[in-house]
Image (cartoon, rainbow, N blue to C red; front, side, top):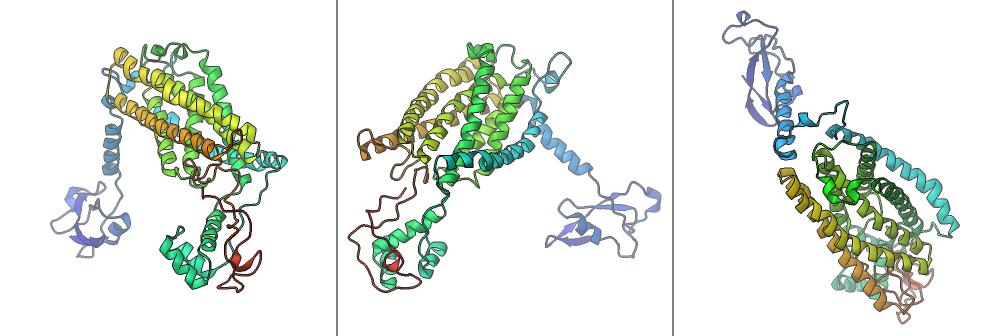
Length: 463
């Protein structure tokens, strides 16, 4: 017997229903049989509940097949020969009265905690960061809105946000507008989708607060541990190193925070390096998970603390930039650049990669998850090199475009780090020599000048 499922005819597997004895079944009679089709849904199977003789077909969902497949997948994923060194099993790392070891199920706590951290962030930004921003005279108003124009709006939303020269000339003839005016309209329209300086300040203050707290906690905890001073301690007696409360708290809090960043990245300020940051968050979460599950927690704490140090300074520099404290911003950015490059390109490979690649090879030896863990660490090093290049490029460009003693490293034309890290949005002023028109066309008006453009200083390059 067959019936149609997912637009195909599938042959059903007919298995004896456990509540019916074999004696009640005769050839040609399907009574007492359970219909199972791995490609059909339960609803589809229930529809075929009667045979050709009108007898009722008994159906009872069976989970044995699915359970068996899932058990096989889990057994493959948690293969001891992948995760653990030779001659070590998961049974050896079960918790006992004498010692506690990292368990994979411990990480489940990070998911609800990530949601709690996200909610705490909303409360923090609303009731702490926002009043601080108001006290620093940071305005909540966003960029100036582009003047309404149906034709340009249709091009912006349906065709392109960055029209080329040919399209600009066509729009100029159609609207009887100067090309420079149309370019300015598109810049203003793009700026409308950017958040205000107040929003940026609140986001940076939240990250600064968390990084400062977790870095301080990490330093206070690690200075009492032997592996901070001798990295070989990360591998002695591995993997039978007990899990302390401090390590567990440190790991769960870091993992929860990066999970919250991973998901809130889609609601935060959109940056040019969105994909790079997404890759960074995924690599970080994978590293934290890998190092916890196979009990590389000691070296993991070193990696986390090292990375949190520079993050504190860059968020502080952003806040100073948004508050227009230029001297403080310059100082903090210089400190950040020095610390970032020295820690990520110096300390990280010499201290961290050296112990994970060479000291662990000598003391423990390689195994499959060891290779994966080190590949993730090397991927992180590649990201460090990329960001260091951007930092140096940003600083050099700021110095070359600014005056001596008056340069803003976070307000650079076409900044590679972010579209909107500058202290102000794109200037909305056209060049002084642009031509004016006396008529209004396609939704434009004469407010602040004809055809929707203002008089003022030359328009700077777009960020």
